[in-house]
Image 1 (cartoon, rainbow, N blue to C red):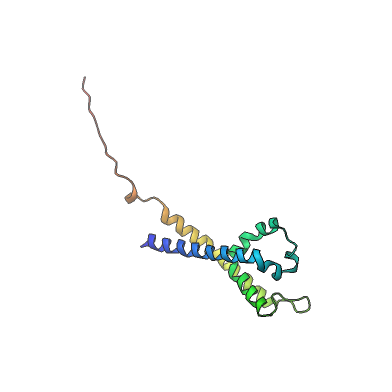
Image 2: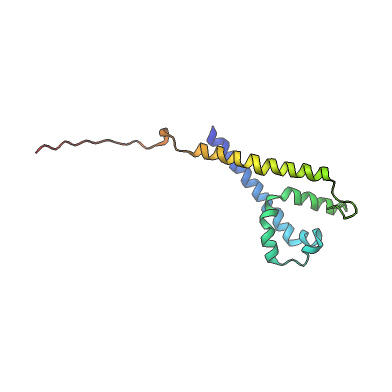
Length: 132
């Protein structure tokens, strides 16, 4: 039961990272130039550095690209910055995911992988008496 749960969890993580890699590929090939003016002149070294963030945060990147294609604002301007409430909400969500859920999931995985006496291979005890 627990092994099935973790195999499903690993499958979900693999699908999430696969989608992130796909979004990152599209982002680096075409969307990056339209997405951020300062990223237009960015080298491939810059893109390699931000690749893990793009893969991990692909839903945010995809939402911003969709907003950009609908001719909506992607980011707040200096005159109309992002509201502090929205920033607090986003930071609270990031805190819950990174600081609470990730260590709990890691601890559960470690606890489930701990060797149990039922998993130990059987040991055959042989005693030999030698008389001289």
